[in-house]
Amino acid sequence: MDKTKVIITLNPETTALVLIDLQQGIAAMPTEPLTADKVVKNAQRLTEAFHKVKAQVILVRVAGAPDGKDMLRPEADEPIMRRGEMPKDWANIVLQLTPKENDLLITKRQWGAFYGTELDLELRRRKITTLVLGGIATNFGVESTARDAYERGYNLIFASDAMAARTSADHDFALTRIFPRIGRIRQTEEIIKALHE
View (cartoon, helix red, strand yellow):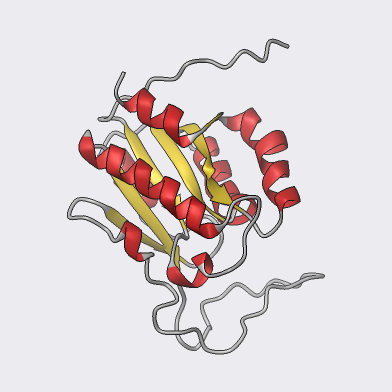
């Protein structure tokens, strides 16, 4: 199989940047292979480039009711446990990515950004066909959103240096085994260049 990388071009009118869970509570956690600070810096570069060409920026955060009753609780071998009350700013988008006037803020209550939210409706009403994805964690929020987007027929570009996971192995598995089958993997600089072609 020819592994030559296709040069991408992105139409600002039909492309949206979707950043997953770059919020204070999650960005404060340790991540690999990039630190959350590096992920946020590259996400900030992408948002600036998208704003410059008036392309849609969408910031997704995960949040829940104070009593936690809207959380998923399936029977599982390693259930995700909620550890006490979250700090008040836990779900706030990191300051570097504070939403601008025309940015969309989507609140989800599980890993993926499509289920139970208005994301698909907002994208379709804006005639968006291509999504550039980044965020934390690569193998949870980003991958879940990507799988749903793929099944809905969106073209996907993964900003590999604007995402990270709890471990490098988790990050690398998504980037090498899942994402190449449903989209294209590029770095921030390539994506910015593609917006200006």
